[in-house]
Amino acid sequence: MTIKAFLKLVEIQTKLASVIPYIFGVVYTLYYFDTLKPLNILFFFISLFSFDMFTTALNNYNDYRKAVRKYGYNYEYHNAIGQFKLKESTVRATVIILLTLAVVFGILTFYHSDYVVLILGALSFSMGIIYSAGPIPVSRTPLGELFSGFTMGFVIPFLVVYSSIFDRNYIVMTLSDATFTLQLNLKLLLPIFLISLPTVFCIANIMLANNICDVDDDFENRRYTLPIHVGTKKALILYDALYFLTFLDIAVCVLLGYLPWFSILTLAAAFKVYKNIKLFHQVQSKKDTFALAVLNMVIIMVPLILTVLLGYIINLL
Image 1 (cartoon, rainbow, N blue to C red):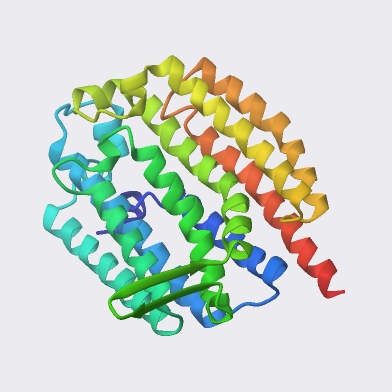
Image 2: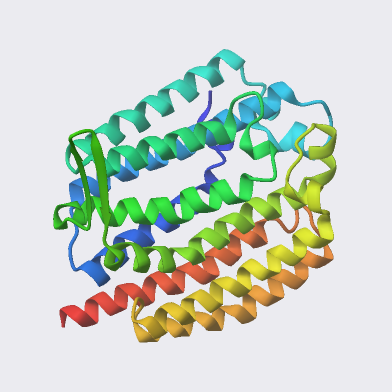
């Protein structure tokens, strides 16, 4: 397998959906908790990135094997297996190697932290596999947006933060006399949950835009995604609403003090996002307008990350 074929198989251009929440988690840990454990976040990144590539490769492999329609943009060009005429055995070996890397570095992250990381990591692995594999993968159901948005948008930043502050006892689990007790500190959970919502909504919209663009092909290939269930018109309304909620959440987090006050400048991105939304409403095409959903995430999250980083630097000074 060539490097070009591998990068297409794992759809390297979509990895922004995991890298951006990771970077956001790192800068937010510095800003809000004033700490960072470099080794933990390095191990976690390798595990995260390997697992993201694994789920994408597995999803493409399953789509290729289960495809009913054997022609058209999605089958001949979008799927690397068909485009590069990859052997299925080679793809399977690639999938296994990526999963092995993810598991090994996930265990190393747990070894240097605690059981909360192990539990959430195992849950994320399970959700990722369920998303791409099984008799009915979640990616072929109306729950794809929810799964991808929550797992990548919230769990990634949370694990990045928690792997650096696990020793502060924000989450305490005890087992005594067959009684399991879980104590959660809202000073940890509430800020991370609220500041993660922009990534949750943006990632859900990337998935939603992908499914809107693929409605015809997905129907023929028996992928009964959310746009197929609710219709393209309602799916577009949801698409718009998620961006509105993204900007609303940023404003709320600034008011609550969870984000630095100058993060309010991120709201200026709404003008460009609105233009991209209008373009997507005009044409829903994988080839021409799907990338706008990825671009919107960059337009929103890069300024947000930079303002949080600036907040950390100002705190240092």
